[in-house]
Amino acid sequence: MNSSFTTTQVIAKEGWKVCAAAFILFLFTVWIQFAAPFMFFVLFFLMFIYRNPERIAAEDDPLAILAPIDGKIITIEQSESELMNDKKCLYVRIRSLPFDVSMIRFPTAAVLTNAKTVHGLFLPPHTKEAFVLNERIDMKCTKEDNSFAMRVRAGAFSRKLYLSKERGSIRAGARIAFMVDGIVELFLPFDARIKLSVGDYVKGAESVLGYFAHKD
Image (cartoon, rainbow, N blue to C red; front, side):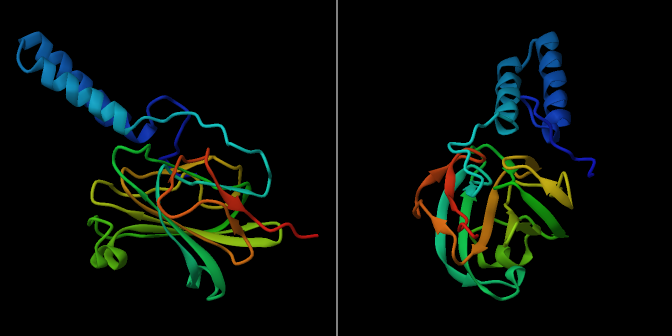
């Protein structure tokens, strides 16, 4: 278990230190009677960025694929990936901005079989350089007879990425990481069914992206 394990507190654990520091500075500015309104705004802004709301999935179907993060769907297409052993798959990409809830959640109840962190830069995620150089986490997962993968790409406002759990069974919607902005990519089985479209806004652990195929 990583020391950056996220909790169900109102403020994500990743933001405790920075929010505490801002609160102390706010009290100091109140004491010296200088720039207190500004520091209150900074404190409120940081608490907003690191907010950690509870979410209830729109459906309890065990085959449902939940959105892993808040943001806009920017890609749905057929693809091939080394994370899926170069097999044909469905590729879904979600862009998360700093004002979206930044908690990354597991899209379905499954087993995380392998996770790899590739350390790198924190460039704006829409650039070609970021696609190669930015820090990312690659995850391979299995769900009964289905295999899928998820990749987290950090953005310009993010910092070092951590996973709360690197192997083992994880429940649907569980908090697994935190990323202020960036892109989350899902590599799904080719027979999975996607119910949303490019341009749709989704909420992590609440919105249903689609469903795994039912297999006897």
